[in-house]
Amino acid sequence: MLFFLVLPIIAIFVGTSPRELIASLGEPVVREALWLSAKTTMMALALILAAGTPAAYFLATRRFRGRSAVITLVELPLVLPPAVAGIGLLAAIGPSGILAPIGVSFSLSTAAVVVALTYVASPFYVRQAMASFGAVDRTVVDAARTLGASEAEAFVRVVIPTAMPGLVAGTALALGRALGEFGATIMFAGSFVGVTQTVPLAIYDRFSVQFPDALALSAVLVVVSAAILLSVKFVRGAEAVGGVGGARV
Image 1 (cartoon, rainbow, N blue to C red):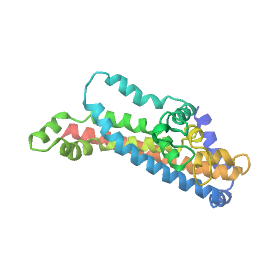
Image 2 (cartoon, rainbow, N blue to C red):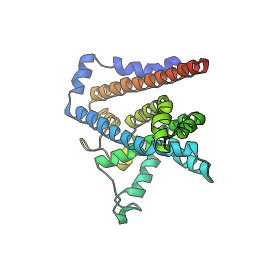
Image 3 (cartoon, rainbow, N blue to C red):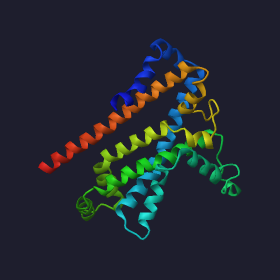
Image 4 (cartoon, one colour):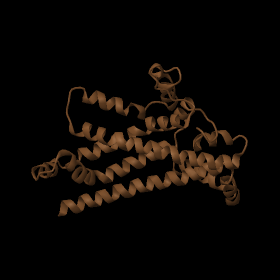
């Protein structure tokens, strides 16, 4: 099993020489794909953090009728096929989507890439953030309120720092999902060099005509994905050690 899982990753790095990989990264199309992926992913992460953090806190700390249904709907993009997500976005906010008559329309643009990345990656952050907020000791929050802190102050000064390891892990998971997104992006935003062609789309576009370029981009994603995975493990390990230390204290 280990051989089966590791062999394709090794093959990416041994399929061509380091010189060829570095030369491929200098290609204008490759550089544009890398820059576009970095830019759109950061924009999507900013939207996810801004909207997902309060939403996750609300869902983690409030009990109301239909809460389970709401959480299920929030998590639904986790299991949707990417092509279905892309078609759904196109039908909702595309040029002929149901919201087009009121002026809400994105398609075949960099903004459409950001929308697609936000849609597919946000549940990864919200789900982890909900778990982190749910694990915060409410007595600490109540104590802060008793000492005169408003709900917003308690959230910023007590809840966020306490839940920070989980929030960082959720951010890393959303980052990895956004960087690797392909299906929803190509269905909703298309694949136009410098406009909507992110790294996964560039790999698909180049592998049949410039295989070294596809290998170079794949190697970059492997390294970034490994770094993200290691960061998540590090944060969770630190959180576990902190929890043990806190229990001992």
